[in-house]
Image 1 (cartoon, rainbow, N blue to C red):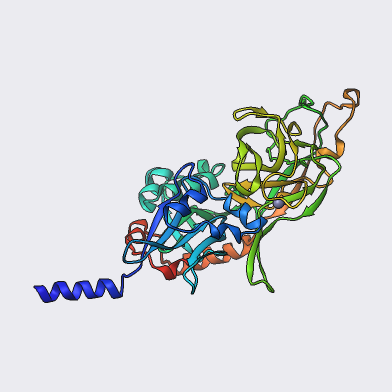
Image 2 (image 1 turned 90 degrees about the vertical axis):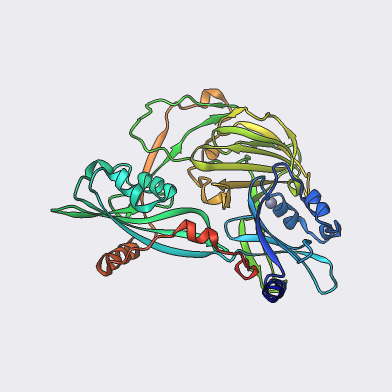
Length: 427
Ligand SMILES: [Zn+2]
């Protein structure tokens, strides 16, 4: 008996010396407080440059992060994801000082295949087959305009991808393609990046090409067509501005050997320049935030959020409804900023995206900002273009192959969550 206990002790010291745990960042917890409460010297912050200080501001209350503790229970490493691809790593160097770095997240992404024959009703059959509510929800979104055409005896086959980190599922599944097989015909449903289904490998995107804005007031919309598929059309946050630093998702710097993400677009602007909301929305944050200094955040529909940083002054309060083009603040040089400018961040489902990928170029309404109300035109003009759905053809081949080989795969959440975390899973 004693011998067995000794053996177990020996194994736990040598193999499980360091323990990795998954944590949630406390709401309202400041980075400095976190460091102090874990005995990490605030000297760590002295080495941070402007971009790294901004990245610290990306830590969100409630978000998942990972701690590695030694056998005495002391934190020796911390991994904090700050975007869908990068994470902060804090770890001891050879001289036993904690060091800050930004490294890629070691995600695993797998593609899974399911095939459900509808016996009763589509959603009850799919739910009982997949045992996964978030997968069912994504399928419901993908098949929104197709489910009425799917009945008993039909087959619904689908491919989806799922990320995992350290053996735990991370984020929600993404449907890649669906194939419906009916007794007399079959068809594919192609899924765009937002998870909506299309009956051809293209999506039609409508956008506003003419919508004048006057100061705080947006011209009343007329001829509103309910069948029109509404897409957000972000506008520039300032007039007559230029980009001084573009968005970067964290390219590897070949000389410095570091990752330097810049989760936004910088616009050159004198202190006191009016800053406008890029879309209609609700103000969710007004205040100071780490390296971003005085900051305003506006929540928009469709999972988008915009962030305006290094401001000098505010013109809105939390809870205010703001219109596209409405002045919400004045630009400045607060936080860690090397000169007066506006930092604009745009987030989709909490992940930073390139603002210039959604801000209208030539078609932006800013180009049409009018100085006098009498110049206003009271109609919106829409244009539609077809955009290819990425990898649609590849996914069609993949699902046909899986249907021919017949093997079904799912991510079984229960099994994954039982796995013990390992440091190797994190980088
Ligand atoms: Zn910036």
